[in-house]
Length: 291
Length: 137
Image 1 (cartoon, rainbow over the protein chains, first blue to last red):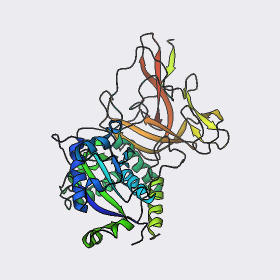
Image 2 (cartoon, rainbow over the protein chains, first blue to last red):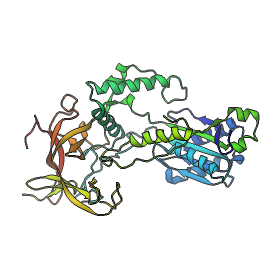
Image 3 (cartoon, rainbow over the protein chains, first blue to last red):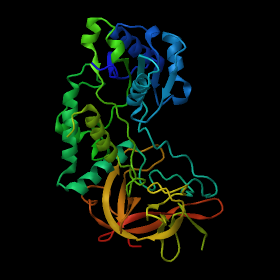
């Protein structure tokens, strides 16, 4: 192993699901303590903490976690990056090691989303007494529902339908997208920690409640509570640890972060395809596997 | 006639309602919001340009579940108006997959949103099918 590699030494995730009796820090602690134990190390061995959380992004989740599992004075990065929050927290810990600031770090991602509904759009408040333009569009009233939709199922339904229109309209887009969901629900039966571990047939999926055509309820993300954590270590430090720790460690071949480059239409409907493709390409290149 | 105000500033009312965009004078990129700079080329000069009122529906969804206060179902979509993509609802046609199709030709239409306490009527816009729209305008 090269000394400048970064490795995952220990890892843990909680069961994803509804955890009304556990707060955000309960979940983060469970994952963090589990990852430390899995790696055979303690919080005192950590040189950096990256704590990913979106819903309580301004609440200092990293420091709150330290107060429960160990206040050691290390640098704490509270990380918020939409759906890439957890992966970005991991990337922050990796970058700290690559920068030579420490040789071991802890990355945690945690969220409580059970009951969070559609995630975007908010509720439409009452219109004001007098129409007054405000905001960058000079809108006199709420736009959500009047000009397109801000709901996540609606936005991603349009992304999928736009993709179909561009690459080949088919007679039954609903069935095509439902088959992806059928495959995903089948995979969930292999992971006891997944929020739902139930096989669903194509008919069950297509006959379930429609949220935003063609997305029915089982085709949408299951909002739930959960946390995961990983201990990362430099290759040089790993060589000094036990044979068992070295044997179990998993090398990080690539950690990539992208954002969406400008395309026509991208500010009307997010282009989630280009940045994903770019991320994959850069990851393959960094890992030396190319395609 | 009561005074009218557009739902958004990029909707121009009058005899010939249409949308306008801020077009970057350097690269031609178009935007519907107030700009600080061009997100494509970085230039900072824009000109107001008319967007064609007819286009092709290049994506849509039929929203059945929305935030409290938002009436459903409605069709949210993206219309390609002569090369400029526009976000809008598809209106004046039943909101179901039998009546809304990818590639459908549509045109801009306007309608009242509501009246405020001063009697000013807010006007919104949507896109209706070029053929077989339910209510003429």
